[in-house]
Image (cartoon, rainbow, N blue to C red; front, side, top):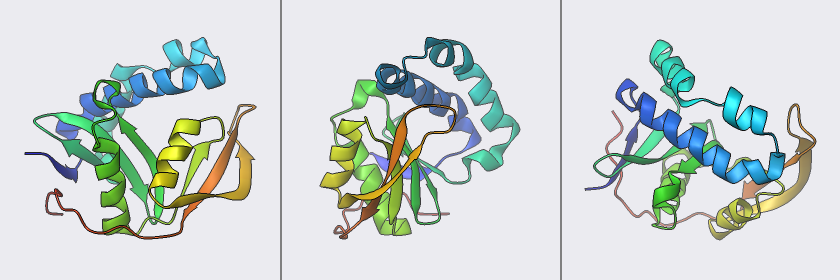
Length: 163
């Protein structure tokens, strides 16, 4: 049975794998920086970082369906990251994660790369709308844009109890 649960140390390598590979797939076309994509961004060091400092997992929730297929990081009422393993995209996992975040944490805002058109469309389908705020992504020439939520969604279930 699928559910969304709090991330734990046992998820460190899977989270690192999802984050690194999904970021490479989605952002290489935007940033065109293979040095960052393939030298700086590495699975093993990120997994070690999670294991060495479990507090970094504090705001991360995972979609678990026999194994972790997606993740979401939430801070306050802001969605920080939402990634689904590219092998499992278009199966409704991202929708379940964002609905969880809206229902459980009343997510009100997020930032997304301006050139991430598919991400912007996904968030718009879930009640988020572009504001006029945009900022340069730190250390790059690319802009991130702020999106805010305009409406709420109905509860759907499939969430593991919060411990």
